[in-house]
Every structure is written in C-alpha cells, then in structure tokens.
Length: 262
Image (cartoon, rainbow, N blue to C red; front, side, top):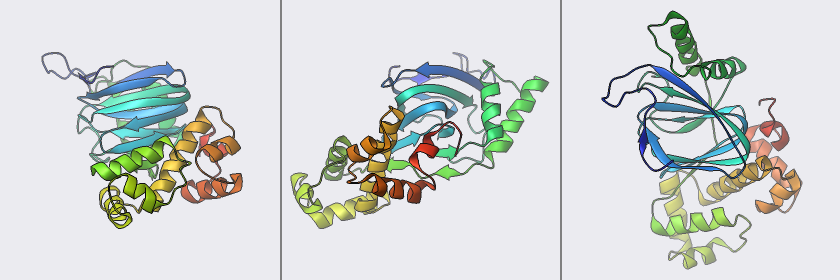
C-alpha cells in the first residue's frame, strides 16, 4: 500500500454505501503494510500472529486475540511478526462512540472474537438489512465493554530524544549508561530524562522497559524461544524477563501469546 487514503464504505463521489465492512488477509512473517490512512475507523484484529501498528505518535503491539483501534484519518503502517491472520472491521466514522479518537490496543472477549470473524464474511454490512443490522449492533454493544492493554510505545517529538529512542529500539541490549547515551544524542542526562517524561508520559527507565517488552513479543511471535527473546531484548536471565512480563501483563509470555487467549 502507498501512503494514501483508502475507503471501504464510501463511493468515489463521497456517498456512504454501508455502515461497516469486513476484511480477511493472511501474511508471512516480516511482511509490512506501508503507511496509509482510511476514511473509516478501523478495528485491526490478530487471530494469529503479532502485528505492530506504527503512527507518528508511537507504536502499538497487537498480540493474538487482541485488536488495535485506529481512528479515521490516522496515518499508520503495520508490520507482521510470525505468520499473521489479520481480520479487520471498518466502521463509518463516529458509528462507534465508546472508543476514543486515538489509537489503543484492546482485549477481545470470546463473543466479540466470534462476531468479528462472522462480520468478516460480509464485504459490507448495512443497517437497512435486518440481519446485518443485528451484527452491527452486537459488535457495537461488545465494544462498550472492552479494556485497553498497556503495550504502547510513544515516540518522543524532540530530535535528541527521538534519536536515543531509535537507537534503543534498534539495539535493546545497549548497556551504556544514560549519561553517555544522552551526550551522544546531544543532550545531558537530566535533559533527556525530562524530555522522555514530558513527551512520552513515562520515565526514561519505564520507556526503555516497554521497548524491551515489545521487542521480546515480536521475537517470540517470530518463533524464538523465551530464553532467546529475553536475551535479545536485553535481559541477563530468562527469569528476570518472565517476572517483568508477568508484572506488566499479568501472565507468562507463552500464555499471553498463545491462541488460547489471555
């Protein structure tokens, strides 16, 4: 996909032809969808594999049986870790009033999962068709109950902080102290700590921990063992990684990423 605007619910002359649309795609590990945007709100669901959604504000990891909410007009790209079965719903803007006008990752209940899979069998869903209206209304009802998942990694705006963030994302095993890394990026340690706190709404140490968590989740989805994923993400021991993962997400890495749900 090129960095353009796409629409699934509107004709070329701007006329709305349905309230909801579904789509199903399967991708190999490493595939990426280039940055683009939609006229519609989007619910991007991973029935298998891990997706990473990235915008200019940050990135969101979408593990199996979770979904990313992407508001209309949000320019985003998607990367695949492991074999990915993508199921996505497109909503007429403002049809879903309960979710915010910002990206987030949400847990998906078993009922909502089945509704998403069912809706993806339709190319379009229209309220004027009774059976399709019932599906739309059930999905909207279920979306009122969802909970967000804390696996977002904000992008700092300041060029110096962004440079450091890019360095650590590229090499999460980086062990040099913050003072040395900050100087390399053109700032003092104190300035860098302030920038991360102001621009990512989390401390530098918490941001770094989140970046390592996301890197490990992507490695696990690509088929690496827990030990290998932990090492690549910068953890000296597997037990330290599992402890951090459980503290952040409430369960072990294997269970969280399994298709059994979580």
